[in-house]
Image: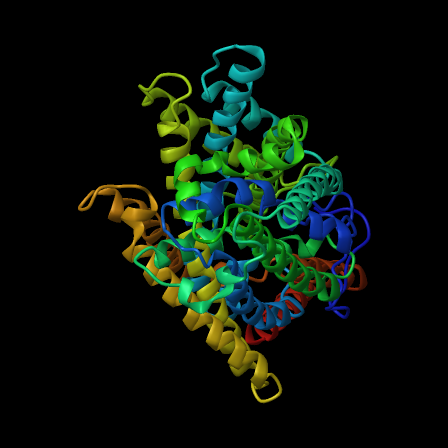
Length: 546
């Protein structure tokens, strides 16, 4: 039974939660800056500049990567228009699946919930591979110690899990410090590259539309859209912000704009440093080491050494950000009956979704151990940690998030049409439709080129087995949603309601207690049950119609 002050249904724009209410996340923990830093940490700027960009240049051969970030920034800004408006009406840690449930129905929401859980979990677990590989490289270079990649990876799993138990505002501070230092170093490189360009000078050739061509474009789209992942997570923290109807949408647009401009500038700086005609060859030869080679030539060995260390801390920040998101999705699903009820409870002391955090820690431990046991390569070989764990899991996660964004775009349209307010929101709905179609196209390209994406040979089972993970998650969720609709229609109707359903329970309990106190004997019990049922039922019906 919740303790503390009760909430009311009149103030729909504000979510009030208090200590002792273990089915609700703690409100007022995050402001604009804290939320912005939390979601931007997932984009891991240094990891993108050092890892994703050279891969896109060298393997996919896409010289126009800077322009690609601008184009994707426009697509995701269009997506954010409808997504942000939806965030003003729905405050739920289940974000994607809650929006899809409210627009396309509870069964679709159930399918989306499992896709979100698997996609974000895959992206989080994948980072452990490249982090473990990088740390083992640092030990070999600076300490002359041979260290298997999976040892630091498992240490990172434990550290991430421990922080996941703590208050989200403390997590935001950790993420914020790491992110700001990371961004400062990347900006330092950008300025150094532009100040000391390659043989072709400050060329803008990378922004020529003709550079966006070739067989690797579909794969490059997936890699680059994965770099944006994080901005869409801001609604996940809606219940923990002071003014979710304002802060969430503000952070979303700030994050999209920052990521698009920051990565477009950094990708352009790489082409300037090497020369647009040489960037593909230089990236293919140096791989992820390209950034460090260029910084050593311009900023010296000490700066490069610091960059190596911050490369690791940046990845850790990304892992922690994804860990927090997975824990909150698990919490939202547990609260609504899509996972066991234990997941829908928070820690009494910190207010964090502890069981969801434990779930992600356990999954990460099992996956890292599985890849470690199948790694028969010598220490220092990147095959298992980077080419398999990082690339495979990251690609699966990126595909899942892209599909969720596409589905959410169409859910936004359905939500406002069903409410009868489409006319007032027409320009937002057009933006949602355009972005939804663009995201579907990106997802199709991604599946088509998935073998290239994960470095598999033509005809390899990986080209369908890995995308099949997302398809399986969606199917499991849809089947469970259909079973729940037949077995427990009331629980099915509450999918996506989140904190609103929590407040319905409070209203029902409050009505029951009030009526029971004013009426004697059996009449009191009868009237209380009737009033509670009527209050909760009518309000739930109204909320679902919204």
